[in-house]
Image (cartoon, rainbow, N blue to C red; front, side):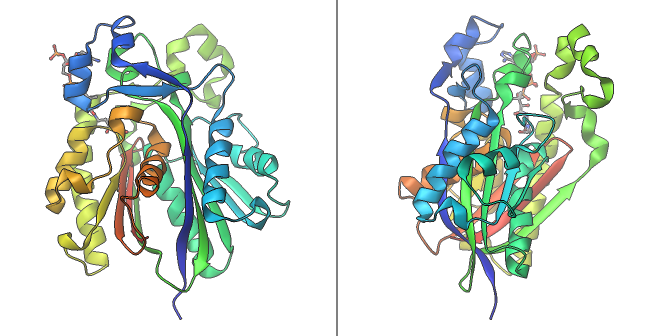
Length: 326
Ligand code: UT7
């Protein structure tokens, strides 16, 4: 009998504070019209002072556990995808484990793959569950990107938002995750990065605060993202012997509505079959896919047994996809 990792429940959490494009007009030389036309973003959520990635993740995880109707103490694998962890160490996954009351002895760690982080985390959980290394997994993507944005740089600060999404997966005899496809190309690092790291020492950030913030050559990233996502979508369909029409829902990373539209065109899918949250959430990096998934599950668009294609592209570069029978 084949064994799969099946999604049992989804959850998400967004900080209360909403920041509109109009508010950004007061901070940098931009306009609501430019942001909407170039990205599809109308607003984003911003974490409150002191509200951390671990806080957002824990709230999303509680909702996913409720939806799955499973107690936290039945989880034996915790993976958090993030680029904005609460501390250098321990992993934020361990902090979440403790707060949710997931028993000592479970496996818990963070994954850093920027905007592709959730797809990376899902791939890892899938392997654990299929091989029997774990039975029930909590997989999250969460970010507090507002803390690493340069609020004087209009080319990046208008794009990102904070939030968290979570899924509970379980070993199952009926179909779940059908395939995952991960890739990276570290040569492209300078196009999208936060150039500060522990290697440079804290004093470097204090001397030059901008070095601790996101930098992106957006237009170059855009072109590679469209091309690369087209290729990974082809790879995913071929690996499963599926045709374009076999996909019920595209649940893409929410970086830019124009990138999502390009992937939908490639798949011959109307935009009604694409889950879009970038208008309300902005780009929440590793959180964007599980957030979008949860929105579409809760509003009833995504139904059991439907086929979902998840895809993401981000810093590294990293990219990947997952095909799921929900
Ligand atoms: O999630 C991880 C991966 N990241 C992505 O996938 C992001 C990919 N990139 C993008 O989504 C788009 O490239 C952006 C939304 C970042 C930018 O859109 P674009 O159509 O590629 O614009 P651009 O960078 O070519 O800039 C066009 C113009 C420039 O002005 P000039 O040189 O034509 O006079 C920019 O200076 O728009 C200007 N600009 C802005 N204007 C108003 C850049 N940012 C802004 C802004 N408001 N916020």
